[in-house]
Amino acid sequence: MEDDGRVTAPSSEVPEPPNPEAKTVVRYKVYKRRWFALLVLCLLNCSNAMVWLTFAPVADQSSQYLHVGLQEVNWLSLVFMVVSIPVSFVTTWMLDTLGLRITLILGSWLNMLGAVLRFCGTLLGRSYLFPVVMLGQTLGALAQPLIIFTPTKQVALWFPDHQRATANTIATMSNPLGILLANIISPVIVKTSQQIPTLLIVSAIPACVTCFLATVGIRSSTPPTPPSASAELSTPEPFIQGLKQLLRNKAYLVLLLCMGSVIATYTCVSTLLEQILCVQGYDDGFAGICGALFIVFGIVGAGALGLIVDKTKKFTEATKINMCLTALASIAFAVVSMLQRQKAALIALSSLFGFFGSSFYPVSMELCVECSYPVGEATSTGLIFVSGQVQSVVYVMLLQALTTRLTDAPQATCGDVVLSWRVPVLVLAGLFTLSTCVFVICFRTRYRRLEAEERAVYGQQPGGRTSTEEEDKDK
Image (cartoon, rainbow, N blue to C red; front, side, top):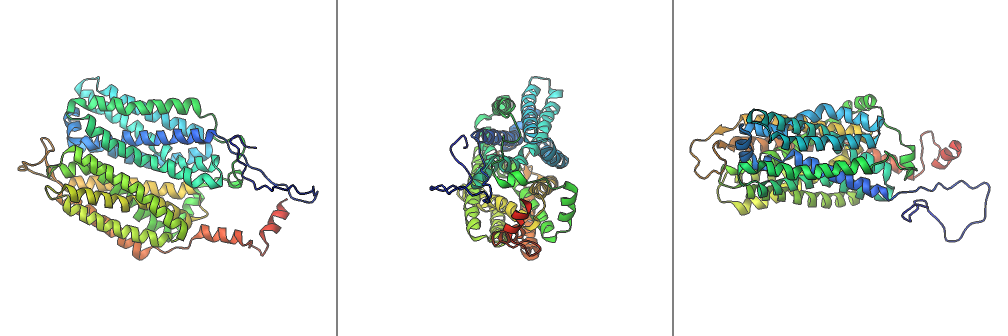
């Protein structure tokens, strides 16, 4: 009997007479503490996203307070992408070898130390300010892969089959929620550059609380007994072997490139939105609203597209249509962002861009598993994340290099330095459109996991034996 009253094994109202030849019914048990572990992960994911984008929505004020240029301010976000690339491979090994508890607690401490160190930098002299803040950001960047890679593992170890999708959605969506809070809180708190320390205190509080909850509350990597048959029987896929299989999989390589481009576009918009809009006279508050709408409608779009694909199993078709619509939205946004007094249009396009662009992520993760099965999910999805981070660094550096300084822009709200983003935003839309064309033309795959499940349902096993015969032999 489980401690919250649910038993995952089927039962009958009328007991059958004992039969010595009958097979033993395995009864799996789940524990209420799984919801606490999920809560800690959600808070940690949200807090780390807030640390990541603390400065981006108020880039001009951050530049003035830290006494650096806008490119240096952008590196406070870019460091998350650079650091996470090598750490991602270590994280995959840690989750499979050291376990969920150590990985989660280590991530919470790195996140907390980074957030606190950033505020400590404001107490030091001007020459130490930016280096200490950057060091704090680097510690937060080290924590990011430890946090982002954890949801799938945690759900598999702690949740029964009928709750996995819900738990995974909750854990995954907590990251965009943190980005949303950063886009709202930063412009609200920071009206002048002297309010940056207050912003750093506010962002450090959830990091400290979450670190305490993780350290004290997470007692084990796995529950006393497994919640499902897959949790009991699953074994980690060897990383090197899985990597070799992925590198020979053409469909996966196309998805790796194109999904990475989507992540990079999302990161560029989140990081540079304030700088792009301020040139045409839009203040930080309006940029924060656009960023918030981008995320809110992205969450709505992800939920809607997920329901459609869950019913139809049309992973490829839904993804291709979604990417085409996102490309159109990105082109429209690039054009309108260069115009003044177009708040209504920018709000509508931010909502559409987020609705189509962000909804690609969860479906593409399912498609990733389908085309790469039986390679482990941590390996296949981890490489997608690395691809996105690499392309994000390239995209942001390329876009910054394409900016030109404006000497006459009286409507701008960017502070002392005003940069033209006309060429960069058009290039960004072009890069995403190119990735969309490559994906639509080149991506073809079988749904390997669905095929394997179908064979299992209909009882056909390799060698011509039925599933019942396979079970009998094992017993």
